[in-house]
Structure formats: structure tokens, C-alpha cells
Length: 151
Ligand SMILES: [Zn+2]
Image 1 (cartoon, rainbow, N blue to C red):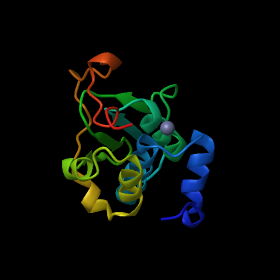
Image 2 (cartoon, rainbow, N blue to C red; image 1 turned 180 degrees about the horizontal axis):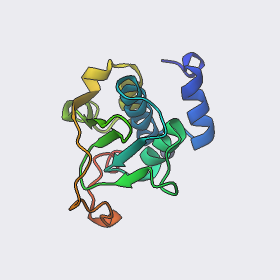
Image 3 (tube, rainbow, N blue to C red; image 1 turned 30 degrees about the horizontal axis):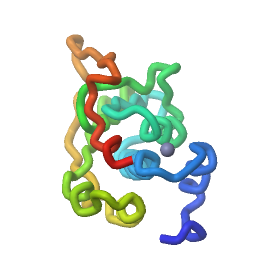
Image 4 (cartoon, rainbow, N blue to C red; image 1 turned 120 degrees about the vertical axis):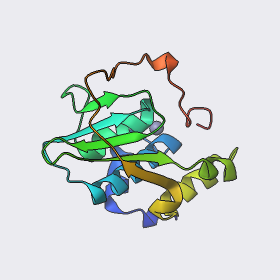
């Protein structure tokens, strides 16, 4: 997909994020997919196992933020979208194959991330609101980011 064919929301994201990278491309697809499944309402909270560019993309596309308490870190290589209003939640995680097939080639990975169907990129499961024992503040350094080694 040439950059002139990018949809307006992707162009807006690249504009506000500052560049197109693996993290923002994943964040774009995560949010596009999740927001087909769940409403972007005031009850939306995103639990993320990734920081950096990916989290920034989630902030831009969902309007959720760490400052508002609607983006919360979790010790999990995936993304949980939970609607506190409806009690509905979904967890998306990246399929390993997509990283393996495109390892070492940033451009082809970004191209794949922008063009493949949702279900070729992500696994979807139900996601429950994390319980009282949930500890959202896992130190950045203790989290493994599947994307960082590729970026
Ligand atoms: Zn970036």
C-alpha cells in the first residue's frame, strides 16, 4: 500500500505520532480491530502490554490515556479492551507467524501489518476486567516487548 493510498485515520495517526513505525502500525490495527468489537465510549479502558510507539498510537486512536487512567499497563503480550459500561471485553494478541514471516525486514512487516485481514494478524479472546489482585504497574524493564527487537 503506497502512502498516497493510506486512509485518513492512518494519515492522521502518522501525523500526530510523527512517523510510521512497526509499533504505530500494530497500534493502528489493534485499535481498528478492537473498535469494531467494542464501543469507543466513556467506559473504555485499554490494558496494554506494550509502551512506546504502540501505546502512543492507542492513545491517539482511542482517546484513552494514562493520565485519565484509561490506559493501564499489564504483564501480558497483548491488549485488553474493556468497556466498564457494558462489561464487555476483548483481548487481542499478535500472531507469532506475522513477526516470523517478516523478521528482519521492517518495510515488509509494516506493509503486512497495514494490509492483512484482522484475523491474520490477531488472535481474539474474551477479556475479563482484571480482578482486585491485578497489579497494573509492572516496571517497563520487566516487560518483554515482542515489537522492540524488531523496531
Ligand atoms: Zn513510532
